[in-house]
Image (cartoon, rainbow, N blue to C red; front, side):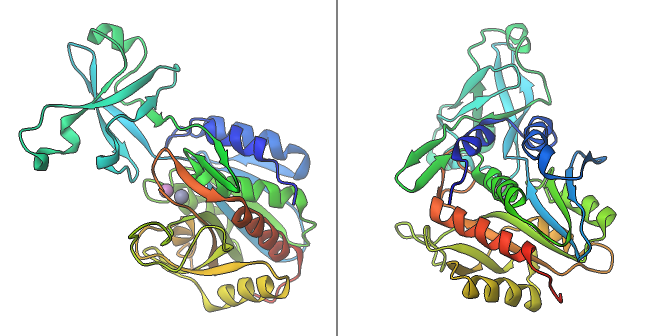
Length: 331
Ligand code: CO
Ligand code: ZN
């Protein structure tokens, strides 16, 4: 399959902290303008891309935001303190580079610790190379969010980058919409604020009233040294979610996805995630309930600046999403 990985590289490198996803939305809207009937931005900032049809009304969701750090304080010497926006892993922060809207990049340092157990978020600071508060304020404001720096690298069939959670989901959705000849009424929703509680998906699902929904997002794996046991691995196919902390997938949706994958020889893996959630967690609870499922991209090092995926899984996800949208369904 001929997927546009140069476009994925560009997509991962755009800054899109929760609440400031405009630049991601603008890029995706440009990619899809000639493949849809209508594009709108709703109140919260979700990008809704519609293709009209006469079948079921299907919502496809992928989130545009990425985990980030919000500046809470700037001291006299120009050092910044910050709060996490989304599931940032505190122990991984030292030495990370963080980029702000004016292009300024800082590095994260730690205060002297008397004992290792003193290591806490409030011992960390961001150094953007400023010597005074006034100098720092030329580049960064209180309440501004910065994202991690993490180049896009291809290592064999693997891709390493920041923000693959969930630009890879956006990418799968974009590639699927470009390919599909669906008979259905499609609403591709590129959502905001997933990382801080699936907020964009909630209002979009309420407004759209879909008959069914599919979210595309990353999931963890169990295939690294001494990982928590989990039967998902890189390169073994797209994940079909059974359960996470936000939902139990409806049996009909699971069967629909797995039967389609089996029929077309698309590799897939059952995914049981013992923590975390996705936009489908919010969507399936909208109004009187929406039958919802999730196509998952197995991802190592989720929420780090060096998340890793496998191209084979991405291709399986695009193939399966196209096939699901392509045919009439009784669901
Ligand atoms: Co995430
Ligand atoms: Zn995600």
